[in-house]
Image 1: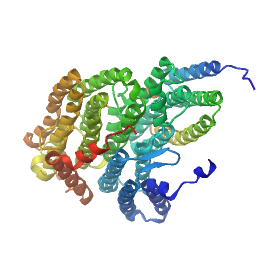
Image 2: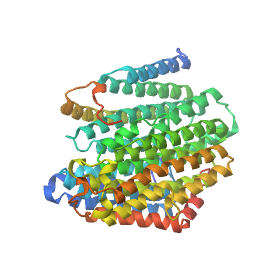
Image 3: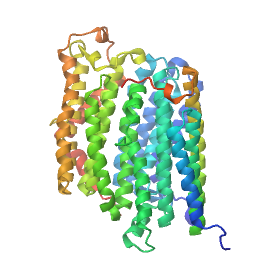
Image 4: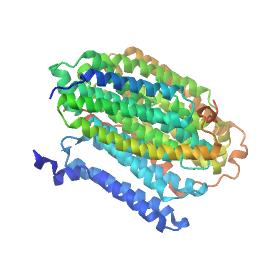
Length: 488
Length: 103
């Protein structure tokens, strides 16, 4: 069918967000040398406009939903949801970075271009319906993020963060790819729906050992990307060393996209062998929650603490994946949305308090923030309460739906351990709030400059969205519930 | 045309190369060598793709291996640049010396 190789107009429309972002990202790189140093902020504005355009493109693509490019991509509700999410995270990151880059005297167009390209990769990942597309999207996203992690070239911590992220990220990718190769070899296809069909029919009966091996290899790759135990060790160093807005970005966008492909591969393709992988995911989820939370208790550096907290949150999400039902999928979608908002917000506050060269990144440096900048402190408090999962915040309903899905799937023990872990986690988040409000103000918050407009927009926007999610969760949950059917 | 070498031989070779890559990644102490070990793993995967593709009489696997090569090249460009900045700031390529984060 050679005529099939020419994409139709509808197929191009389904790819519209990526097309817009690629054009904008390239445009930023072309304009970069033509822009005077003091005007570099305008390139950031251009990136935000491009991301807004991509959000519109996502809307148009959703109106014309369906498969594209011989079933390589599939624009369904699930993809649309995550496209909106990663685009939003990209826009918030750029907004939070405008003043950060000015302060570090490192303004350049490539930062914005790389953020946009990373979002392109994440959009491809969440839309992919085919293992090789997933791999390519993952790499587009990862390679751009490797550079962002080491963006301040002369900063030793940035170098180290980028190096570790790069080496361990590519190592994980190799595992994922080897898993893909074996799946291709044993089923003769890389299309997720086809794989599911082969697995379900049992015809051509691929050997169970081979299937188990390939699913395990792919699990290693995914576990690395979502920082699940035992492959979590890179996350603390990488998040601690990277520029704070980039850490916020990494813990939200690429992570949400990684969970999206995790869900798609394991629920759309590997559902027929769910009994085999469920136990592995449960064990990993429990270990991830415990390791993340207990290690976070010991951290003095607040970025490192949030890195361990992000490991713990990955554990909660994996409980919902292990449930492998539609409520679980919807819960993951809701959770990733609220988690992305609170983490981007929290890291934006940290970037603000850290000051030039990120001098003040310890929990103790938050002392006196409640007195010196009550509004900033109040907003950070909302993010931290949501991370704990206090009612009236998005984090509460995120956890609620995850544990509901787990109970529906009869996962009693993971639920109990998850709830106990949430209680442990409350301690280290509350400690930040206590330091902020009740500790004597130190030099770290003395003459702290006021919040820049971009950061203000990020903080108010995320805080409001978290409260809306906590009071009217149905805004997102209805959409997530409708889109949670991954089996076509 | 009957294949002179059975599929399993290619797959075993590919598995050996992949394991060598893992071993190199874990045990080598020079950043460049660690990076080369990752490339070895990717090429082991390529060998699997090609072998499966030949076995299945499909062209897909060949195409995948091209994509893997392109991605590996992009990764090498970025990775070597990152390694270069590390070397510039620390004047060392020993991986144990690149650990300044607190624990």
